[in-house]
Image 1: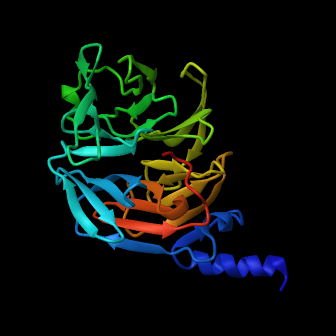
Image 2: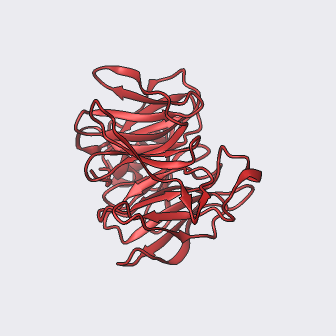
Length: 308
């Protein structure tokens, strides 16, 4: 079969199902058996998925229910933590502790995943003023914690901070500083695999609704801001990267997948609007997606970049 005709047939089959293919490169992401699967439903607003490889389970937030849910292939869905202080975004640090952005308490916490679940408040104020409502969080290999503070869930008349910052926190020294202060609504964020670039979503109202990328200096400052991508529909929310620095952004139609230059390769189409995503499962080939009332997964050929 002619290679070009063969690709057109494959693209047609994929686009007719769970995927909208914009570029032949998208087949490197999907693989031959990719299919979107609904794992659980009946929730209220899901967010902040994080894969715990040691126990082979997923944790994620149901914000209005004030819960952190747990899902595993072996045990299905259960409530793992309640109350959660309306936690939103989560990640793990290099010691396997759970980092959480708590909307309700307007703070960033760190919790052990053992039976004690020992919790520390890492930060709740900047220069004596309470955060708006921390939203999403990532941890760099040097231990610094980076998080966004857009103010979702907060009556902005009650906001104490004059701007909606992206922060960098050194948990050892307690040093907290803004690294960006010109976002409308800084939302999801992630590092490139080599940590030389930071990607940040701006889900502004009414605009901007794009993803920006920054160069990260050795002393953890951000330079060379540029817009990587404008979403075709909806606002950018949660984001993750694979090992080839392709960016997975949740938005109006599903999960948009971009290459490093900002070229849209394709979309994982969804009936529910997704809020966030993370890689996990065996080999980090499964993309877990939190979407309004449900949890979804799709097994890909690509490999998630995040650690641990």
